[in-house]
Image (cartoon, rainbow, N blue to C red):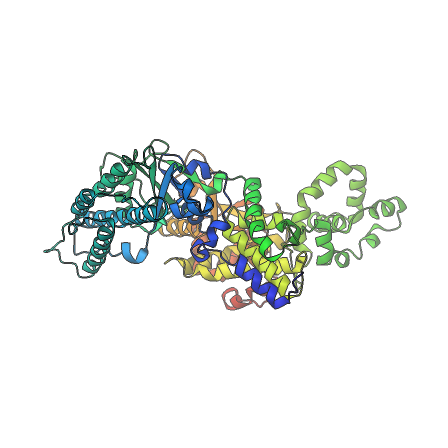
Amino acid sequence: MSVSWTPVDRAAQVAEVFGGFRAEWLSENIFSYFTQPAYFPELQTRRPCVLAGGRGSGKTTVLLCLSYEGQFALNGRDPAKVADWPYYGVYYRVDTNRVTAFAGPELSRLQWRRLFGHYLNLILVGRLLDFLSWWEETVTAEPALTPGECRRLATSLHLEPCATLADLKRALFDGQLGFEAYLNNIDAAALPKVSLQGAPLRYLTDLLVTKSGFEGKQFFLLIDEYENLLEDQQVVVNTLIKHSGGSHTFKVGVKDLGWKSRATLNPDQILNSPADYALVDIGSSLSEPEFAALAQRVLNSRLKHVFPELHDVVDLLPELPLEKEAELLGVDERVAGFEAALGDERALLVFARGLRPLQRFFIQLWSEAQGVPIRDLVAAWKRNGTEWSTRYENNKYAILFAIRRKKAGTRKYYSGWSVYVKLAASNLRYLLELSVQALILNARAGGEGPVPHTLQTQAAEDVAAKNFRELDGMSIHGGRLAKLLLGLGRVFYVMARQPEGHAPEVNQFHFGGEAVVPAELAQLLDDGVMHLALVRWSGNKLSLNQVNQFDYAIHPMFAPFFVFSFRKKRKIKLEPETLLALIERPRDAISALVRRVGRTDDDDLPEQLSLFEGYYGRPAA
């Protein structure tokens, strides 16, 4: 029997099934929705791994699926299979509220490190004890630890003597609570007894791999949100990673640029890849086709819960051919007088009638930029068809932005699965947000099939606006970061609206190797990359660590918000002082930069930027 859906029902169902953008929100559903990425087997090896990627790139989901809870769910919750697993992972997400308590003038750096090392022992051993309790309940009724082993482990952690796993768990939990309470009442003259860094962890895992059921196995210590650790705390964990191996290893999830230090407690040793760990960079580990295929599988696994009659998200997000987009933008009106400009030369009129409206518009823009009559350009195209066809192909996307210059309404469409993939830029959460918003808007409108191009564009604008609003709270630099994007976004918008006579699709910037980038700007740019406001890539392979050797762009996700091209094309050279001026004196800086690149800032703001009329000093359309 078919189900009758109302628009409200359908929208609510879409939000319920697709709306879990954070792994933490999905609970048990995270495992039923999991789709294995191509790099997943690399994380299942016995060596330490660092999984790096922006927020929403899938780090948490992958680490949770490496945990014993995740493996149990992914293996059909079959207790008979557990003993055959090659590894058992325990998951710990770094809690900023707790780790920031290990700092202050009350103690020396060395003392804080020792306290944090003890706390980490409590946390990780506690996770392993939770696993052992699960093991006893799920796999075997036999005690995982003998009374003597429980007592020795308790001794190593300075806990009261325990004879059973249950007693040990209670004592550890009480010890952790007491230790956390102590931190808020720190007394340098009465420091608590602490365990040796990593020693209880090594004792327990080395012990377990000698027991029946664990021979030849390894324990994965999965640490998520590594960027939340203070620099000194990362040094402590780096040391554990450096000396792991055998019975246990580490798998770490960290945001881009969130790894503050590679140092260890030994000043003569640092972590090096690939000698000490394998770096899995999500952004570079997946090519765009691989990311698109992975995202398609992820979305389709959820799609069937809402649209059982449809099987592929690609079918719901149809592409918009450029000539069709030009028609929707009103190109016919823009070239209404095209033939009149040709006079009465019949051969040119016949040839011109074979040109599509967007081709005519291209000739018209070229005529305005070069000061050459339209009839002469049509004649040139007629004589040199191959040359002009190539020129048109290189510019036809860019000239779409000029069709509705100084006009209200939709100024550019952002529609189609391939467009959404490029806007997301290898970020699964962004692609989920785009897709769910498009499906919700379509459901609210009563649509059950493919999402119209107008609604896809509105969804892209909505998601971009939502993520832009969130920038302010992302970090202490969030406000300045938002201002930087507002300034750059306006400049790239103006350049996109006036493509004639200029290199098309300029949407990136660089400093040049000779530039001296102030520390405050370098930190701001790093924050922008970490929080997905900006993207960057090496502009000079010989100097990967210098800020002035990178090319930068606003994250493609924000292209629909500011209305410029999301495609990775051309760049302009900016001075560090210009970027700072865009933040501190936006109106003057925008005007000066627009004049410098040969444009005029005489267009109204897109409707979605109406809230920033005061900032820009001009009205929205």
